[in-house]
Image (cartoon, rainbow, N blue to C red):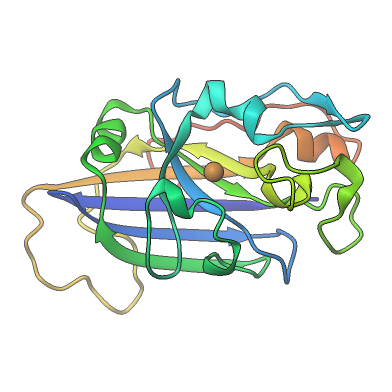
Length: 213
Ligand SMILES: [Cu+2]
């Protein structure tokens, strides 16, 4: 299992333009994605035993990256309540997500403090092309397999200089960037996913000044 990605958030007041680019995850399966807040602003590094296998679940990660602050859904509710609305999240292994919406003020405060962490969920640990019960049921929702909710990619947002999320040919328009805060996160594969392919238990936590270099 591999995967990588980059995320950007630009904030003007409480309005946020969010872009997430991900590649290398399980195709054809939902990937819940959230901005987690109110903890250390870090990603988990040490896998635990779940159903006899080394992996990291959301409960393992929560002391590091905290609770859901924002659900990066395709449409509708972006509150924590939509955290497991699996039909509202990207469902391909590689995708580019963009959305502009109002952030909860506490999420903005976490971005400013350096305690906002992007987490993309959904890992096919046993590489059989689907989420199954190899790790048992999700600790969050027993109707879902743990593979569907375990963190796949994680990265902490850090402040960066930009006037808008990278958008190719189209500019963000508007031009009112005076009060814009820009944040970027390089999101990497969690230690558990590396273990799943027999690799070293290397922490994937990354703090980068710039998402472009
Ligand atoms: Cu999450």
